[in-house]
Length: 292
Length: 309
Image (tube, rainbow over all chains, first blue to last red):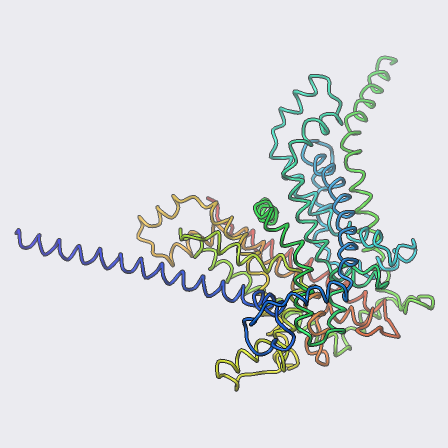
């Protein structure tokens, strides 16, 4: 009996150590997979970074640069006219973001806080604009901007983004206002606040996080947009950053040090914003997905 | 009588007073969506029924632009490429990020670091990633071929983007590389919303990891998976930026999609002398209808048999 139970205990122990081994093995396998994917995801970016600080002669010889050479940055900063293109992009992004925030905040508030006939239908019509691909309005928008004299203008480019951007922003702001308690507004109304006062003094200050999300997503979208910016602006002095990079391939062909450093300089603003506001960034991108 | 009118007036002014605030709050959005979305879309439909080169007056041609599409070999090829790109990216970009999100959600250390790393390509513009990968794929000086030669696999070097048979798979790899982090983060957030009790209950019933995935995770993630499929489909149908930057639809139309073909007809790779704006817009309408119809079908199918918990 005692021997039997002892052997049972031994077998039990063996089984436990076996499952423990399997657990550790599993865990290691997971890490191996995750690290492999991290390498694949990071390697192209790392290669770009390495190429940008290489001497032009050693580009194709080794992965690591023998000596850090930052002269490429200086070279393209002036030759590609990057300050001008970055300034153009900043203007278009700021203008677009401002308009989208104002329009979407007020509309999102109306959809979340008022009842009126046809509200839900109107909401679906509004956010239906999200489903319309840019190509569908590309050519009519070109004609429209030409007709009102805003082709080849940064303001015109900014306006062309509004139709495709506001819908998603309205969707996000509505979801955000819905998460705020209604009692706050009712209390303010009892205290004699006007409807606009309720919006301006009660809900708007509370909506900062929602607005931040819209600002981040819209900035990213506008900064990175290529099709409209490449089409509606042909004046080289007015090009925004993405089409100006696209043009650089013609000019630099296989001068990879120059191209890489140009790409990195163009990436710095958006990467900086991402690293500072990482949480809101990811929250914003997933909010739409999970609340929908 | 007088009292009744007075009542009516009062209720009318009250309705007005109640309807005014939402109306005012909605006006800016309504104007923006009308002027910059609804009107251009209607104009696109009208333009697709005309023949126009942008200079001489447009001519009404009815549906003949659409009829011509079916006889246009390049259009049919671009349509096939779009279908190919969309189907492959939908499959990979729906399943791969899900599996990795499940691994990340298995309670391992450093999952935030991995997520941050995986997310880096997402914030990069399609233009920049296109240019970067064009450098990588470049046959003579690119990283990929040098890497293959460096590790003694020189026999595997390819023309990549310059090879008509390889160009689409090469582009698809870039798409998967860049979008992984985005869908992963969506899945990860959704996974964390699944109550732990469901897995514990499944474990008590003797479920192994595979059973848990099929019977708990996938049904619980169904709405998010439908969303990922819809987003991937819409992005696939309208694919443009990366392809235009990497190949402009080449070599010899081998990587033309609806998006790039439309663009080259309307605005030309090298400044076309004869833009066919009506014909290009007809292709745009095809893209619009495809993305609309496909997403409606997917949402419908996704809702059917939905499991309630």
